[in-house]
Image (cartoon, rainbow, N blue to C red; front, side):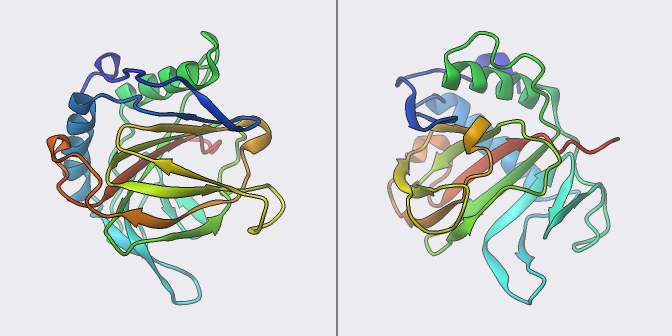
Length: 223
């Protein structure tokens, strides 16, 4: 998959908070369909998609597969020791290029992607009942922006503050093809997905039901 053929900004950036930007319709239907295809391949291995088990025994309702580095609460490793011990699939260069283009589109700055080199992706699949509680993405040793791409059913994305899980927060509807970037002062803001909107996606993407969320991150880890 060639990242140069992916981005297609249909809507202008909407600033949700300083450093947090929503770009509606950034991915065209063809690009979304190709993402669905590659995510299906990643989902079968070398580390299969799974419900992540939390340290206190709870199980996340979303299913997750990782690239580059494997995330498990609350650290990154090269091998999925909590699944099958295998090394995760490599992080492809076209996703690096896509992440750089996403920053340029979100921040409207041709230099915004300079030096940005994501090295891990968390790919979450939400079925109709899946949710994501308010949390911070803070297991990385880097303050580089997080790039989030949505495909499939729309969701309510709750973007909060950096101090607590409570108010103030803003609810944003993320639809298929939307881009959301958070960096700078918003990098460690709490965020979550209180609900998915079943049946709101476009079957032409190849995803008849559910939502895919691909987040690109810089771990800041050596090697």
